[in-house]
Structures are given as C-alpha cells and as structure tokens.
Length: 226
Image (tube, rainbow, N blue to C red):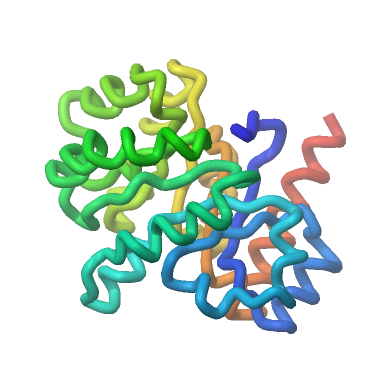
C-alpha cells in the first residue's frame, strides 16, 4: 500500500496520551501511526481503532540503541506477523550510526521480508551520501526496495534531506524522514518534496502536537489557495 505524495503524511507513535490524541482528532485527523517492536506490548485493543487511519512499521532499532539493548528479531517478526497486512511500509532493520553494517543487513533482511508483500524502506544514515549518494542510487534501483527512511545524526539528516529527496524522485520512490518534531522541520521536509515524516513527540507532548499539527494544516490550507 505504497502512498503517492499528494500532501506529506505525518506519523507519530501509536501510543499517544489522551491530551495529544484529542488535539490530533480535532485538528489533524489524517495523522497516521508508527508501530514498533518496542511499543507493541503496550498497544492494547483499546488503541487498535486509531491505526485504521493508516500505519507503518518501524524496526525499533533506534529505540533499542537508546536503551543500549540488542535488536529483538523475534519481537520484530511477531509484529510483522500480526500487523504487516495493511501497513503502509516496513523499515528494514539497520545498525544505528553504521552505514556499512546497515548495507550488509539489507541483503540479509530483504529476502526474509518479501513474504509479507509490503513496501520496504532502507534506513539511510551518515555515510550514505558518499560519491553523490552512489549507494542510495544502487539500492533504489532494486525492485524489492520501495524507498528510504532517513535516519542518521540530526545534523547529517537536516543537511541531506533535499539531496536524498532529489535522488528518490529520480526513481519515483518513497522518502520518509524520522525524528521530525518541530514546525521548522515539517516545513523543511515538505518543501524538499518528502513523502512522509514521523515524530514520537506528537504522542507525548501537547506543545509538540499542537505545533506540528498546526503547521501541516497551515501548509495544506495554503495549497488549496492555488
């Protein structure tokens, strides 16, 4: 269920608190959600209705990295078995901060994930920009890969969004940017031609929810004026 870009889709963690969810419902009901192995244990049936609006599956690698834990492949498979059908896309497992290892992981994981018949995104990060994004060109030329998920360090991410978006457009493939939790980043991504973004802040902090939702609503409103 690959999503073409008419506007930029925004995702947040599928465990929003009540205050944040209320604001989303009132102002930006088009919000989509991210499921990951790290949050699925807390994702009870009382929350299942919100993902009917649309959801994607993150691999959870960044969350494990922050907690200094090893990647839990069993939890990832369980998440896929239960939720892959109907998801927008799946982020292929990666090694945070290590592009060379991530590249080797792609060839291991892609054959395993093909059985789920969902769009697969490669998590690109620091190092993938070398030689004018030559690695990214090679990956996007593969029919099994439908796009990229921009991870990496903050400075690297912000300085490479436009370049990576331009590469994706050459191949007509999806570009998603992670950790977008401010109005400034929403606007940067939108005007760079990014297809979708996510930020967990919208599920946790009212002010972040308000700013991000209001920003994308304002962008959409301006588009309708032309």
